[in-house]
Length: 260
Image (cartoon, rainbow, N blue to C red; front, side, top):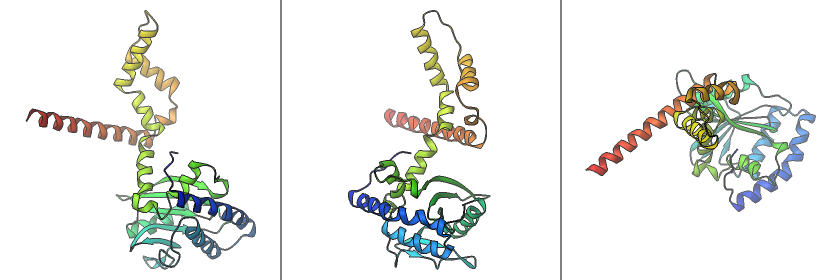
């Protein structure tokens, strides 16, 4: 996970918040506290760790299709996150996720947090037919280290300060591009396979190999099979194709402007 720059003031709050709440959260599961009590703890965490105003920006009175979500984060009149909270002793599962996604989809809110105070999972809703969702990242609060820049980044992306910079959306965009599926597709591309073939010929005099032979080695022996088959590789192909088309159009427009 790439790290984001955390301002000093926010970093101090995150470090102090972790030191305070990790012992508290660690005991919640053993105490088997109720869901309502877990919501109370999370509201305190959203204030003391993540920097929200408990009395202005956090509400449990957000009604959606006749029912109330556990928590909503509302900043300057706009709801940015819905939080579906389960008791600290509950293992988060797909049924909980579907409930949270339904909340967000019906309200037009793209970010959903599913948490039991210990485990935090952040999802982005994809509005389409049908509604879909994707887990962006997650963390175990008790496993985080206040000395780790990466761990502090995980917390900071949910902070009050990150809303104005849209840090979570930018991280999600980066994660969709820099991953094993996109890299696996690029490694099989004409330009990369051609570069491999030329490098082999340069280093090993007399060696002859075709692009197709190299692709066979890559797909059979180098790249993991789960990076080549399934929905994620298909999405990677589509993303690369879309980016290539956009780049070609940009270059064409640039050339036309230069000739004008």
